[in-house]
Length: 381
Image (tube, rainbow, N blue to C red; front, side, top):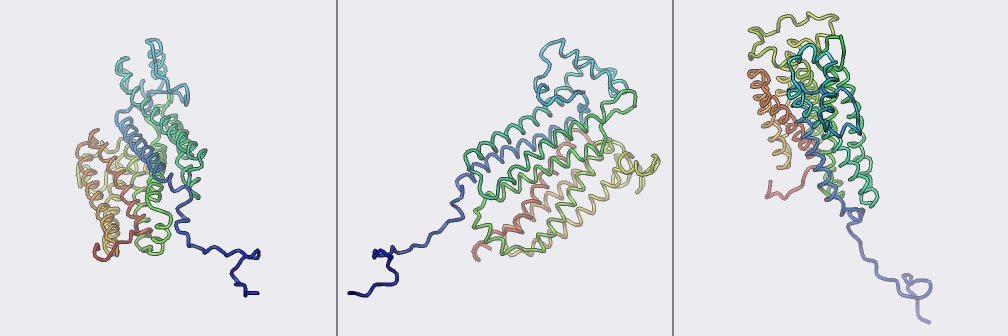
């Protein structure tokens, strides 16, 4: 009787030679990553458009033209002369018409109505695109492991955003209170949440652009100090965005149109005239614009510090990402000055807002590359 190998099976058959298997991390729905990125890219473009249209709606004072919140039936605009007159009559009941816009005829009202209707309609489209995409990938089981909640968050926040939008508009739909605009702090919350949603979409697109194996390996080379500074810059930029919303909410950008001084002096006059004292920080045009200016200067200084630290990165793609950030920051600073000098002209002001979107995305990208550096060969450095 011959000796049996300890590697034989109990039934005497030869054990098959084991072969190493690779790519186990990539087997889990990796084929859906590209399709999900396309879907997120569509959402990204729609949210940017939403921010732009929202900015134009504010700059044209159109936000209060629709005085009701009808999430479903409001998707259908007025279709007859009677419908248009009904909407116009509702608008005539609020303070904005009584104080600022009694000169309006029906044709003038239609112009501001279409801006607000378009803004709300874009919100509905974004919600539909998110729901169809998310539900489709979920039903087909194509969402990669661990990505379910990350892809759900933009949609959930979008639902909250709709409610906040009406909360904002409702603050300006008043009768006999002398209020002709929405509350500036509510506008700031509304805009800030839009940027937050855009941030989640951007971060997900960046993560899905590389394989899970690549991300796991890149995480080991994380440049922690640089990542931390980029995070700080991201938070500081959000603060500046919120301050900009306060400026827009009370038309503070049209109150002091000289630079670098304000009405010929460093600190604006009547900066604390309102009562109680805290109201000046959200409703006094001079003080709000002054705070926005000072915060902008500090943001640029901090951006230079972060950029210089970013140039010490061992990875060329990361260094280039921080170069893009500082270039966009410089452009945004110049646009901010021009916006003041032009008394927040519509075209200049909306460009200023869109460059804020660009800067926000570039900071996110630089932060991502600090946390997940791209490895390249030495000759490519």
